[in-house]
Image (cartoon, rainbow, N blue to C red; front, side, top):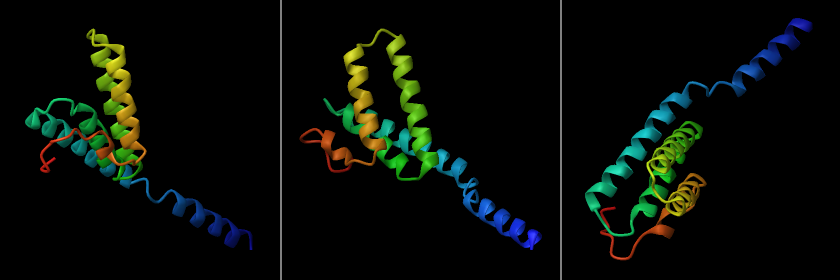
Length: 121
């Protein structure tokens, strides 16, 4: 009976942790989503569009799962830390972080979409 109970507990523990292998894949996919948003922002070169692309990159990455959300948070915080240390304005960095969190919380990134931005983005 004890062996059966121990086996049942082991199965339950393993089952709850069985998704550990997805995290690195989700993180890599999330990092790719962030890179795609950055590349699109550079390509679009559209005035007042940076908050939209911040939110979109974080949104797309968070859709991947916990690994993607983690990658988005690490990349966003790292980017803002580097830009903050390069003398960029604190207000702009804070606004970027608002857009980052908005996207990571799976809110619609179009909230930050500037008028006239081509539909391609």
